[in-house]
Image (tube, rainbow over all chains, first blue to last red; front, side):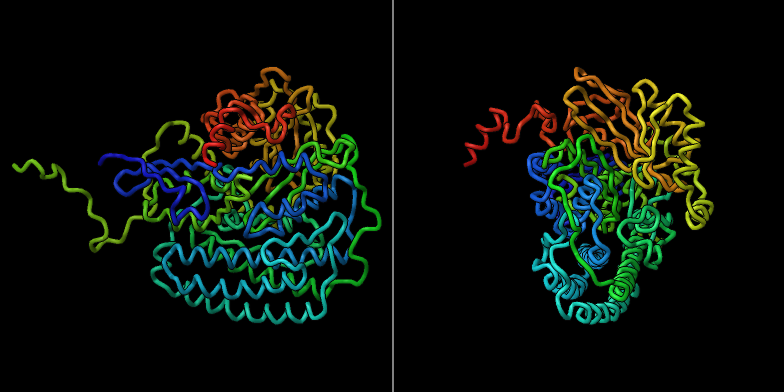
Length: 362
Length: 214
């Protein structure tokens, strides 16, 4: 049969943002694929070089609409490493709680979008409804629903409000119950199983060689989690499991994220219990970074391992900021995952990778 | 014989047969095949064991690196779990191959470029599943015609990182399989993250386009 190229995107329901996937098909089988990104390039790295350190915190929020808080946190951690500032312990616990709430928000958004990709529109509405509960929590603590602008260099902006702990525990109890409902709708659904089981298999060796990280790597059977293996904040004091699945297909990626939400709730409960009283901002925060300082910081973003490389030159602006997004490198691995699958499975496979174009193009 | 009749009946899938999944597509070239086979040489049980038992700490890894690369002098631990050193551009591929195959640094965390005004730096950050520290090593390049050999042959993850550095800094990666612009348009003739490019420095032809669309 004749081979031909099919353009999926930039306007396509599969893409979840502006990017193009060119697939070469032979009949229905994909023989090659070329992803193209760059439609949303805003030059955030260049803008950050021209702003003072605190001015870039809201800008870092704008890297991703799904997990804004994890990006501004990564930016703040990098600046803190650069300046040698250590946040007080209470602030670190608050950061852990908000980051895990952010992870749940991101995974619920992913679950809703993925279910809609696969054709169950009911499952689009239910996780979105529970996501609202966690967005309410973030609104309670920071005032924002999508863009929080909550972390500060040396701590967090404000302490937890009254009733935050009991509200959080209440919402967690709701989600714990609802997760069982989601699993009932997804795992007992023959159509979901047909479209996800054994589809888009990524082998562990390929995953590591291609730089795939986060839930997608753990779904391939590699139990590597930065919160455990390169710990930051107070993650080394908390007890949590690394969610790992063996098969490496779309269904494994879905299972990893469902289990991660459970572990996140587990972490939030522990952090709320262990959180000490005390200040939430460091005593002294310098305005400038020392000359010749250079740091590399990594965190476990909901989509994978995000890293930032920052250089200070003695002024109040960074000399260079380099943002590395996990979604960027996960998209670049698309050809290896797609080749050999059917063209009808492309939405299922690319949806399971969890793509965010805001942070990919920067 | 009817002209429109198919000479061979196409393979019918889905009529009483289970759908065939993960059918291997024919390999397009030999290079792809060899890299795939290399990536599959990977014992998952051994790996899980290593990750659960605990990873090698930075002091041990630093000693291993010093023993293996006696000619690299300024190798040091900067922060917990960070080892930094410098590599010359000529020895880059050799060093990378040793780090991957002998030291078990199987993954690239990122590759980043820096315009130092006197020249360019390309920084590589590697992570391993059996050693706790990440390795950060830098290759310094001259200001005029910066060029370095690609490491795509060592880690496939390097492909897009190197394309991005080419796009932003104009650093040429020799033997790169697909060195095109990734973020900017193909007709861009400038490199935005170089220090001589100022914000709002939009080229003339693009300004005209912006005015037209208004």
